[in-house]
Amino acid sequence: MAGGVLTRLAVAGLGLVGARHAAAVLAHPSARLAATVDPMAERRAAFDAPGFADIAEIDVALDGIILATPSALHADHAEAALARGWPCLVEKPIASDSAGADRIVAASAAAGLPVLTGHHRRYHGSVRALRDIIGAGAIGRPVAATAIWAMKKPDPYFQVPWRAGPDGSPVRINMVHEVDLLRFLLGEVEAVAALGAQPVRRAGRVENGAIALRFQNGCTASLVFADTGLSPWGFEAGTGENPNIGTTGQDYLFIAGTGGAVSFPSLTVWGGAADWGQAVAPTTHRVEVTDALTGQLDHFLDVIAGREAPLIDAVDARHTLDVILRIEAALEAAA
Image (cartoon, rainbow, N blue to C red; front, side, top):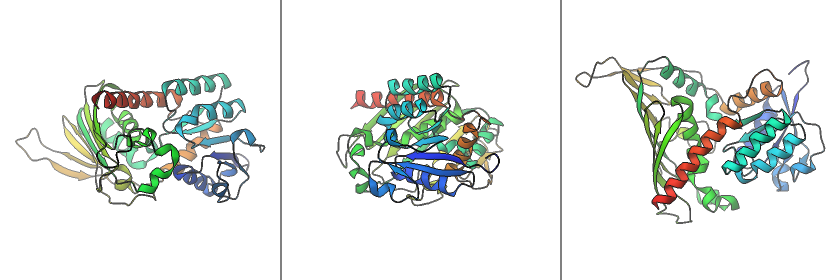
């Protein structure tokens, strides 16, 4: 904010995530919710801001827009917003396919405007601390990682039309977060394998599975997931970041290196041994709890003002999408 002028933002798509974005903008001292966009009037009415059924209808001045619409619409909406001169924060995944991601990358370049992608975990203080622990060599060279994400989604969650079919699988909705987190921590993925199943709801989408990743640095990782499994394990449950998901505080991600190991979100580092002949000992690191969506919004305001470049732009986000598409292809081939 310069000279007390608030950054005017619109939020398009007022579902579970979009509503949280709108609330964050309303609460931010340097931003103003200048417009909301959603085809459902009752959603728009929940916020004290001019409401529109479509992006094309917006007739108020904006400095930027947050796109939390369905993934299949991201490319269309980003192109429309960039054409009107609005920097964009596009929710994850950046698009529903590679062609859509390429369109956003091209539109951003043509307009000379930034696109920030909503992989918000990168803004968690605990995630930054985890990356620092790994980067400082506290566990030596990372060689293996594993994560368990098992959350039982309620049936009404799937009553939203776009979630009812294959697009509602936890791969694109949830594992995209895990893949981006591991890319942020461990580097680029060079190989993918996956197995999946749908034994419970049988709604034409993968419900549970196991993903194997190999990174360019030689580290390997496994991701076990289920949206039908009632458990304490998952990023949201462990960190308490999502008001829609119960908090357990349990670790769900474990990374082993040549000199030790670390578990997350407790940030417990295990070390002090030469090999398996000695017992490793734990040390817990404490970090200040931060709200990732607020941190992401802070960054978006800096991006709009030209003070910072996007932490994860459309090109970077396309790499995460590429891994997800390769996982989906592996799941389909193994079905």
